[in-house]
Amino acid sequence: MITEKEKSIYNSYLYASRKAKNKPVRLRQNFDNLESRDEVSLKKLSLLLSKYTHINYSDFFIAPYKVYGADNYFDLSFFNTRKAIKCYSLYCKDKEVQNPDSEDSINTLKECLKYIFEYCLDKQITLAMYKSFKESEYTDALPEPFIHLKNHQINFYLLHALNVDKVIKEQQGTLTWIIQDFYDLYAQTRAKFLSSKVLKDKAKKGLKIIEQKLLKFSS
Image (tube, rainbow, N blue to C red; front, top):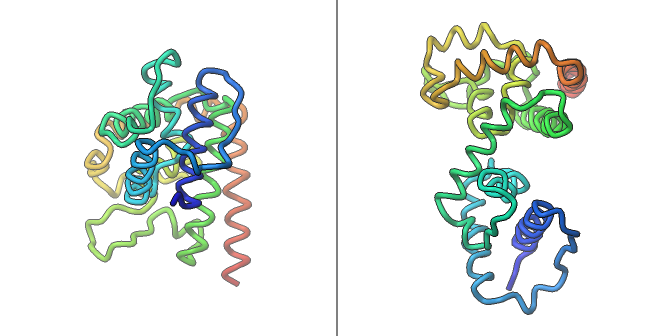
Protein backbone atom coordinates (compact mmCIF):
# COMPACT_ATOMS: atom_id res chain seq x y z
CA MET A 1 0.00 0.00 0.00
CA ILE A 2 1.29 3.45 -0.93
CA THR A 3 1.13 5.98 1.90
CA GLU A 4 0.21 9.64 1.50
CA LYS A 5 3.83 10.61 2.14
CA GLU A 6 5.00 8.25 -0.58
CA LYS A 7 2.45 9.69 -2.99
CA SER A 8 3.79 13.16 -2.25
CA ILE A 9 7.37 11.98 -2.86
CA TYR A 10 6.42 10.33 -6.14
CA ASN A 11 4.59 13.39 -7.42
CA SER A 12 7.50 15.64 -6.44
CA TYR A 13 9.75 13.34 -8.47
CA LEU A 14 7.30 13.37 -11.37
CA TYR A 15 6.94 17.14 -11.30
CA ALA A 16 10.71 17.74 -11.30
CA SER A 17 11.46 15.24 -14.07
CA ARG A 18 8.79 16.72 -16.33
CA LYS A 19 9.62 20.35 -15.63
CA ALA A 20 13.33 19.71 -16.21
CA LYS A 21 12.44 18.88 -19.81
CA ASN A 22 9.83 21.63 -20.13
CA LYS A 23 7.03 19.09 -20.47
CA PRO A 24 3.51 19.47 -19.08
CA VAL A 25 2.95 17.92 -15.68
CA ARG A 26 0.02 15.80 -14.63
CA LEU A 27 0.34 14.54 -11.09
CA ARG A 28 -0.49 10.93 -10.42
CA GLN A 29 -3.73 10.31 -8.53
CA ASN A 30 -4.12 6.54 -8.82
CA PHE A 31 -1.25 4.39 -7.55
CA ASP A 32 -2.98 1.00 -7.88
CA ASN A 33 -1.00 0.05 -10.98
CA LEU A 34 2.38 1.42 -9.97
CA GLU A 35 5.10 -0.90 -11.28
CA SER A 36 6.54 -3.16 -8.58
CA ARG A 37 10.11 -1.91 -9.12
CA ASP A 38 8.94 1.68 -8.72
CA GLU A 39 7.03 0.77 -5.58
CA VAL A 40 10.15 -0.82 -4.09
CA SER A 41 12.23 2.24 -5.01
CA LEU A 42 9.57 4.53 -3.58
CA LYS A 43 9.52 2.65 -0.26
CA LYS A 44 13.31 2.86 -0.01
CA LEU A 45 13.24 6.53 -0.93
CA SER A 46 10.66 7.26 1.74
CA LEU A 47 12.99 5.71 4.34
CA LEU A 48 15.93 7.72 3.00
CA LEU A 49 14.06 11.01 3.15
CA SER A 50 12.79 10.17 6.64
CA LYS A 51 16.42 9.84 7.70
CA TYR A 52 17.55 13.05 6.00
CA THR A 53 14.63 15.26 6.96
CA HIS A 54 16.45 18.44 5.89
CA ILE A 55 16.32 17.48 2.21
CA ASN A 56 14.05 19.65 0.11
CA TYR A 57 12.08 17.38 -2.25
CA SER A 58 11.96 19.86 -5.13
CA ASP A 59 15.70 20.53 -5.04
CA PHE A 60 16.55 16.86 -4.55
CA PHE A 61 14.69 15.69 -7.64
CA ILE A 62 15.72 18.55 -9.92
CA ALA A 63 19.40 18.41 -8.85
CA PRO A 64 20.71 15.70 -11.24
CA TYR A 65 19.13 17.47 -14.22
CA LYS A 66 20.93 20.67 -13.22
CA VAL A 67 24.22 18.87 -12.65
CA TYR A 68 24.22 16.50 -15.64
CA GLY A 69 21.84 18.27 -18.02
CA ALA A 70 18.15 18.06 -18.91
CA ASP A 71 18.80 15.58 -21.75
CA ASN A 72 19.43 12.83 -19.20
CA TYR A 73 16.83 10.64 -17.56
CA PHE A 74 16.89 9.55 -13.93
CA ASP A 75 14.50 6.85 -12.78
CA LEU A 76 13.17 6.58 -9.25
CA SER A 77 15.85 4.09 -8.21
CA PHE A 78 18.61 6.61 -8.97
CA PHE A 79 17.49 8.76 -6.06
CA ASN A 80 18.34 5.99 -3.60
CA THR A 81 22.03 6.24 -4.51
CA ARG A 82 24.95 8.19 -3.05
CA LYS A 83 25.25 9.86 -6.45
CA ALA A 84 21.84 11.46 -5.96
CA ILE A 85 22.87 12.82 -2.56
CA LYS A 86 26.06 14.20 -4.14
CA CYS A 87 24.05 15.90 -6.89
CA TYR A 88 21.82 17.47 -4.26
CA SER A 89 24.85 18.85 -2.38
CA LEU A 90 26.39 20.23 -5.58
CA TYR A 91 23.14 21.83 -6.68
CA CYS A 92 22.56 23.43 -3.28
CA LYS A 93 26.13 24.75 -3.29
CA ASP A 94 25.61 26.30 -6.72
CA LYS A 95 22.41 27.92 -5.48
CA GLU A 96 24.34 29.53 -2.62
CA VAL A 97 26.33 31.74 -4.99
CA GLN A 98 23.76 32.42 -7.70
CA ASN A 99 22.46 35.92 -8.46
CA PRO A 100 20.80 37.02 -5.20
CA ASP A 101 18.12 38.95 -7.06
CA SER A 102 17.05 36.05 -9.29
CA GLU A 103 13.56 34.63 -8.95
CA ASP A 104 14.99 31.38 -7.63
CA SER A 105 16.99 33.20 -4.93
CA ILE A 106 13.96 35.18 -3.82
CA ASN A 107 11.85 32.01 -3.59
CA THR A 108 14.61 30.31 -1.60
CA LEU A 109 14.75 33.31 0.71
CA LYS A 110 11.04 32.94 1.47
CA GLU A 111 11.52 29.27 2.32
CA CYS A 112 14.46 30.10 4.60
CA LEU A 113 12.55 32.84 6.40
CA LYS A 114 9.66 30.48 6.96
CA TYR A 115 12.01 27.85 8.35
CA ILE A 116 13.61 30.28 10.83
CA PHE A 117 10.25 31.52 12.05
CA GLU A 118 8.88 28.01 12.60
CA TYR A 119 12.10 26.88 14.29
CA CYS A 120 12.20 29.84 16.69
CA LEU A 121 8.51 29.45 17.44
CA ASP A 122 9.00 25.77 18.22
CA LYS A 123 11.99 26.44 20.49
CA GLN A 124 10.31 29.51 22.00
CA ILE A 125 13.26 31.78 21.33
CA THR A 126 13.57 35.25 19.85
CA LEU A 127 15.40 36.04 16.62
CA ALA A 128 18.22 37.62 18.64
CA MET A 129 18.60 34.40 20.65
CA TYR A 130 18.55 32.29 17.48
CA LYS A 131 21.82 33.77 16.21
CA SER A 132 23.85 31.99 18.89
CA PHE A 133 21.35 29.34 20.02
CA LYS A 134 22.69 25.85 20.72
CA GLU A 135 20.52 22.77 21.11
CA SER A 136 23.43 20.73 22.38
CA GLU A 137 24.58 21.07 25.98
CA TYR A 138 28.23 20.75 24.96
CA THR A 139 30.16 24.02 25.18
CA ASP A 140 31.98 23.42 21.88
CA ALA A 141 28.76 22.77 19.96
CA LEU A 142 28.11 25.02 16.97
CA PRO A 143 25.20 27.48 17.07
CA GLU A 144 22.15 26.19 15.23
CA PRO A 145 22.20 28.72 12.35
CA PHE A 146 25.36 27.05 11.06
CA ILE A 147 23.88 23.58 11.42
CA HIS A 148 20.86 24.83 9.46
CA LEU A 149 23.20 26.32 6.87
CA LYS A 150 24.97 22.96 6.44
CA ASN A 151 21.60 21.25 5.98
CA HIS A 152 20.49 23.87 3.41
CA GLN A 153 17.59 24.95 5.61
CA ILE A 154 18.92 28.50 5.42
CA ASN A 155 21.54 29.92 3.04
CA PHE A 156 24.48 32.31 3.11
CA TYR A 157 22.43 35.27 1.92
CA LEU A 158 20.10 34.98 4.89
CA LEU A 159 23.09 34.46 7.16
CA HIS A 160 24.37 37.88 6.07
CA ALA A 161 20.98 39.44 6.73
CA LEU A 162 21.07 37.97 10.26
CA ASN A 163 24.33 39.88 10.87
CA VAL A 164 26.18 37.10 12.69
CA ASP A 165 29.77 38.31 12.14
CA LYS A 166 30.39 38.40 15.90
CA VAL A 167 29.14 34.84 16.31
CA ILE A 168 31.35 33.69 13.42
CA LYS A 169 34.45 35.22 15.02
CA GLU A 170 33.66 33.40 18.26
CA GLN A 171 33.86 30.06 16.43
CA GLN A 172 37.60 30.65 15.81
CA GLY A 173 37.71 28.91 12.44
CA THR A 174 35.75 25.79 13.45
CA LEU A 175 33.06 26.39 10.83
CA THR A 176 35.22 24.64 8.25
CA TRP A 177 34.41 21.44 10.16
CA ILE A 178 30.92 21.46 8.70
CA ILE A 179 31.47 23.42 5.48
CA GLN A 180 34.99 23.03 4.13
CA ASP A 181 35.04 26.28 2.14
CA PHE A 182 32.84 28.23 4.56
CA TYR A 183 34.97 31.38 4.70
CA ASP A 184 35.44 31.57 0.92
CA LEU A 185 31.69 31.21 0.37
CA TYR A 186 30.95 33.69 3.13
CA ALA A 187 33.16 36.34 1.51
CA GLN A 188 31.85 35.64 -1.99
CA THR A 189 28.18 35.79 -1.00
CA ARG A 190 28.71 38.82 1.22
CA ALA A 191 29.80 40.92 -1.73
CA LYS A 192 26.78 39.78 -3.74
CA PHE A 193 24.43 40.34 -0.80
CA LEU A 194 25.64 43.89 -0.20
CA SER A 195 25.26 44.80 -3.89
CA SER A 196 21.84 43.18 -4.31
CA LYS A 197 18.96 45.48 -5.18
CA VAL A 198 16.07 43.21 -4.18
CA LEU A 199 17.04 40.34 -1.91
CA LYS A 200 18.87 42.39 0.72
CA ASP A 201 15.84 44.58 1.33
CA LYS A 202 13.40 41.65 1.33
CA ALA A 203 15.59 39.67 3.73
CA LYS A 204 15.86 42.50 6.24
CA LYS A 205 12.13 43.25 6.06
CA GLY A 206 11.31 39.57 6.43
CA LEU A 207 13.51 39.19 9.51
CA LYS A 208 11.96 42.30 11.06
CA ILE A 209 8.47 40.82 10.61
CA ILE A 210 9.65 37.52 12.14
CA GLU A 211 11.20 39.36 15.08
CA GLN A 212 7.97 41.25 15.75
CA LYS A 213 5.86 38.09 15.53
CA LEU A 214 8.15 36.15 17.87
CA LEU A 215 8.16 38.96 20.42
CA LYS A 216 4.38 39.06 20.24
CA PHE A 217 4.10 35.33 20.90
CA SER A 218 6.57 35.50 23.79
CA SER A 219 4.82 38.38 25.52
